[in-house]
Length: 348
Ligand SMILES: [Zn+2]
Image 1 (cartoon, rainbow, N blue to C red):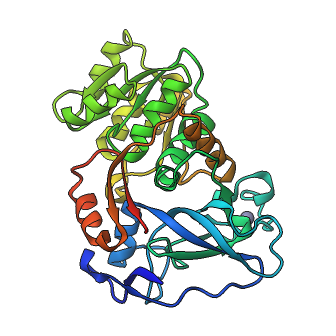
Image 2: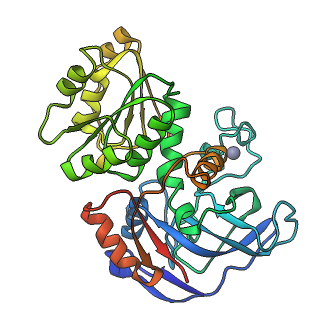
Image 3: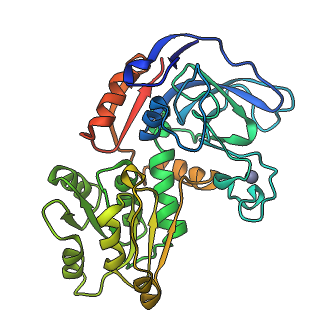
């Protein structure tokens, strides 16, 4: 099969487009012929060999997101058959762990105690074929293209998890969405709007804020030019916001905690450069605020997101589609940070 294969770690050029054997199926596994793969910052970190918690075996195929059609099933597979259009989960769960915190059976497959990750501990989606266990695929609804589905997991499902399952947004609330030009942020703007919230979007560029307004943001703050906290206070008559969807970290995170009203909740899915942030505990306890987070959405969240995309209630935000052989160019663009939303590889 054709794939973007890494035989060493380094810059975008280490992903060499060429032939490699199609993975052989084991018990309970399905083989997916991919039509599209999402491109994520995570893939660039894997490519550089800078994942702190896992050792990547070479040769390796990156890619945590994808969409396609099952072409073969291994022994014991009953849930799916050849011809089913599916998306593999990037968080690979065993489905049987009984860790009291994780417990796949309760639907927290995204934090499985037996955690593996597509495109990290196993070959990923920058390829014509990928294999995963039947437990770790979900169906793509009719009418939703593989291009639109492929980029939904890291962006939309994480945003849904933050906004709806962590912040528990309700109609009439005011929510601050930071990095509204990013993949998660641009999705969170749409989701908060769909939930009936007033949305204050923040970003570091006016171009990104214009796009956020087009996606439904009511107010915008450019935190490179304006004081984030002062602007939130001004826009909420001094009260603060009920919720923050956060992915920036640093002073933006610190100011966002201050921008919460009493009993407010801040949900985070990351910080740029994994930077540590100093937090004043007394601000948290005096205001009775919640700080929570997630890394990705579980299967049920992804099913919800795919359905809403198919129904047209959420719109995929795709900056550019590259052919698979141009994966290095996609990474170069991703690392430039000069884009809005997602990038997708089309696999012919
Ligand atoms: Zn588990």
